[in-house]
Amino acid sequence: MHTLLWDQHTCLPLREGTDVAPLTRYQRPGGAVLSVNAGYSPQRFADTMALLRHFRSAIDAHPGLTAAASLGDVEAITGAGGIAVVFDLEDSNPLDDDLDNLAVLVQHGVRTLLPTYNHANRAGHGCLDADDGGLTAWGRAIVAEMNAVGMVVDGSHCSTRTGLDLCDASTRPVIYSHSCMRAIWDHPRNITDDQARACAATGGVVGITGVGIFLGPNTPTLAAMAQHLEYAVELVGVDHVGVSTDYSFDQTELTQEMAANPQLFDDSYTRWGPIQWMPPETWLGLREHLAARGWADADIAAVLGGNFHRVAREARRGV
Image 1 (cartoon, one colour):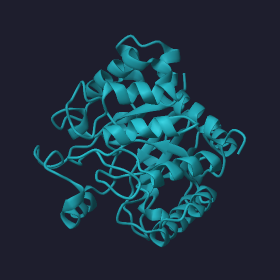
Image 2 (cartoon, helix red, strand yellow; image 1 turned 90 degrees about the vertical axis):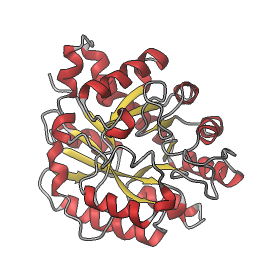
Image 3 (cartoon, one colour; image 1 turned 30 degrees about the vertical axis):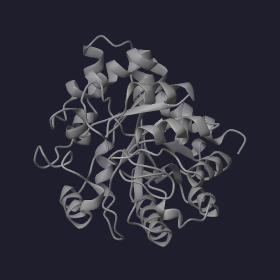
C-alpha cells in the first residue's frame, strides 16, 4: 500500500547555487510533497525572489523533482510517484512591508508563511520573547491578505498569544507546519494544548516535526515522533495532525546562521549540543512504524499526507 507523504517544511541552504539533488532522498513509491523554505527573518523580498528563481529552475532541471504551480500539479506529480515541491517562508520580513508581495510570492510557489520567527517584529511576537503581545494590526492585515490570495497561515515559531490570534483572525485553516507538543516536551518552540485546539478549530493541522531538540532532549527518533503524534491525535483528532521533518540539508550552514544571528536563538537551541536531525531515510519509515504501533491505515494516511492535502485545497478554494 502506497501512502502520500507530505513534508510541510524542509530546509535547503538559503543561497543561490544550492544543489537541489538532496531532495531526491525523499523519493518513494506513492510520491511526496516537499515544502522547501525560501527565506526567514534576515531575508528581504529581493533575496527570497532570487532564491525562488534558483530553486524553481534547478528543481525543474532535476529528474524526479518538479516545482508544483497548483494543487492539480501536486496531485499529478505525486500520482506518478514523483516529488512535488512548493515553498514556504519563516517570517514576514521578506514581504518588505508590502502586502502586494504576497500575491507575487504565491505566483512563484510560496504556499505558507509564518508571521514571526522566534522574536517580535512588526507583525507580532515570537516564541522566544519574554513578553507576548500577540498579533499586531499589521499582522492581522497580513493574515487577511494571505486568506485572499490563498496562502496558508502558519503559527510555527510564533508566540503562544500570536498563534492564538492567528487562529482568531484567519477565515481559512491555520497550520503549525513544524511544531511539537509542549505537554510532551517543554521547549519554547513547542505549542500548548490551547494552541493545538485553536488550530484544529480552524480546520487546520499541527505538523509534528523531526528535530531532536523539539521532540525531546535531542532525540530525533520515530518513537519520539510517534509519542507527540499520538498525544496530538488524542487531543485534537486524527484529522488535525500531520508531519514535517524540518530537516536541514546543511547543518553547518545552520550552525553558522546561529552564530551570525545570535539574537534569533537562545540556549534552548544549544544546551544539548549540536542539534540532531531526523534524516529523510528515517522519516520514510514512519508509516511502517505507526502501523507496528497499531495505527489504522486510514489514520496513517491522514497524518502522513491527507490532512495537509486537505488544508491546501481549502486555502485555494474560490481564489
